[in-house]
View 1 (spheres, helix red, strand yellow):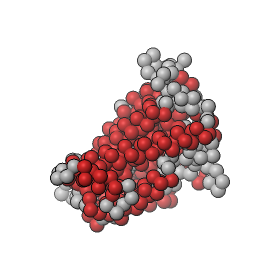
View 2 (tube, rainbow, N blue to C red):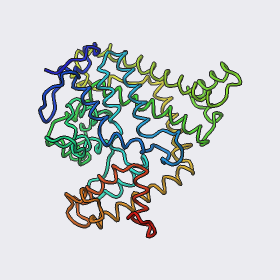
View 3 (cartoon, one colour):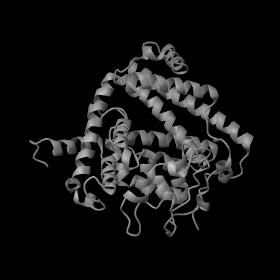
View 4 (cartoon, helix red, strand yellow):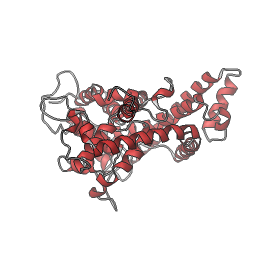
Amino acid sequence: MPIANPAATAPYATKAGETRGRLFEEAESATRTAFQRDRDRIIHSGAFRRLKYKTQVFVYHEGDNYRTRLSHSLEVSQIARSIARVLGLDEDLAETLALAHDLGHTPFGHAGETALDACMKEYGGFDHNAQTLRIVTKLERRYARFDGLNLTWETLEGLVKHNGPLIGPGRWLEDLPRAIVEYAETQDLELGSFAGPEAQVAALADDIAYNNHDIDDGLRAGLFSIDDLMALPLVGDVFRRVIDRYPGLEEPRVIHEAVRELIGTMISDLLTETKRRLEAAKPSSAAEVRALDRPVAAFTPEMTENNAALKAFLFQRMYRHYRVNRSMGKAQRIVRDLFALLHHAPDQLPPEWQQGCDGAEGFKTARRVCDFIAGMTDKFAIEEHQRLFDLHDPRA
């Protein structure tokens, strides 16, 4: 019998003691709930360790103070766990989903994903959410009895559907990324419904962490200034309050205080709106949350507008800044070069990655090369490119 989490007090919380189980049956842990065990398996995975050298906006060598996928995932998990605790949800499941949500990202952030998706256009494309599923169900090879991490149904469902239902009116299973379609043949993750409440909370915790910490990183990198933020709704107001409250405070502390207040404000807004929706819907179980026609975790309309304005600002002033464009242009060339070479010459892959290939430019070879590149850190991708393309590099 699975151990229950006594902290998950809400009737609509996902209950660890009532998990739908794992694809491969295992004896339950005597000391951990099913979701705590999932969390620990993710933390000990190779894919999680590699997040240390995978970046979001800045390439790893551009500075040690910028966020990586690892530091971002830890920050998301802290926010998700705090929100889950207030709502009486299963904190361990929320934390698990937050820690795992970025496992499928390529090196070099979204620029790397765009390049790899283009390389894979004729072979099913590339999607980082689908790659996360592929990693935790297939690519991690640590256990004697199965591939992947053999996570619970609830964790897999949350990873796949944290942004909402994947199929429905006008959206068909065959239109989804190949990794999700293939896995659906093995286990039904109920792709036409919303995810449980913990997954919904983790998805919005990602938004809170991502946007606010990009403000921090963008200011520290000099891509924009505090003055540039003053016209933004909410963000400008918070920075003005901090500056008025602490006249003469040095800029790094102003930034930290403002970002800290912004995160708290967004969390409070999320809690207010989520509690309102829960009170209106009155779900008595996580299954009823999944069956609703809209998510229960949400921002208020005003905060949604403020968030959209911030995203638009960051897109123009940070993600499309010419310095970032130059760096990401180099990164995309590295991904394209690696894919073209290794797809044409799979015998240059490490021996363990040659297994499962079907020859030069084959379909299976494309997927193996894609998995190999997607799992690279920024650091390893740069070094591998140098090894393969620099005739003077002795490390080939």
